[in-house]
Length: 443
Image (cartoon, rainbow, N blue to C red; front, side, top):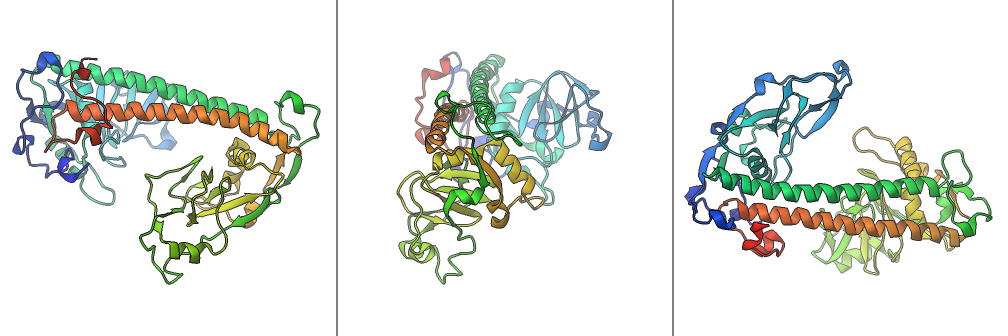
């Protein structure tokens, strides 16, 4: 979104009516003639219950059934509660305050809240409506301090909130958001179920610690030889490691080219994150950096630290620069790279990485340690490929479900931008992902 279109990014003393009237772009038919919304500071539409909150140090917490909330959600469960009812929490410190970072969230039932979250009881405004508006808002201009940054109560009370004058319109918008949230929750549960299913299947398809065979084996391989135990690097033809190289050390700069650099920033499990920080290199830099070695389709790129243990298969034949905190594995001819990456993703291998890692905040592992990690693999490449194919089919389902969930979230985000008044207008197609506007709000 362009700066002029960002919600809440203008100086917070300005009102919404400075640039445009308080009327949303998308409105339910029965409220299209209802007039402008009202702008109210948050402190005028919420009671503050911060005096009731109370922190409990981890050593003094007694485990129990009641959620113990902090700035961003549930921190623990304790044996007592101090609140009983439906309230709105907003992170005071140790939270994220950017747009759509879920700074505000509704809690209900019996629970405890520590001193890192403001506790609000809205009145005269629907709490779901307020929660969604605050979630959409960039609260950065209201944050003070740096170590740590903080959303003080005084600044929070200044946040301007557009409020429909009719309670019926508030409820209609809140119901719309709630229905989408129900769909998002349902699709998220389906995604979690798929991930849990895959994790359980991996635990069956790979030998457990101390065992020589997996508990589950495809019928055609049940009489095959036992799996082979070997060091991890025995499976590899070559390991590419250019972590010490930088354009500066090569006497160059990135050069403004189009060749993607792969690093721990954009190497995720199974894919390249093109939204993450990424340097693009020139042809000249590529030639000097990679020399005569190229990443090939099917090679495995592995993060060695911060974070440790992410892995992906090079997806195509494009050229890539192997950059910071990652290495690449070229497997031997009798080892399936599709199988090996599933082994890397397996709970047993990841647990071993965690056990062998060093560093308190940025976990990492060195090549000498990784080289000697003991693994078991099928002696027959056909069995390797069968396992890889089975698990990859679940990966495809997970990818499709993830995309479905992301689409729903983007749709809700687009609706939020249309159902609330904003500064300076919003580019419908860009901000709403191309979803049609108009009478869709009747749904």
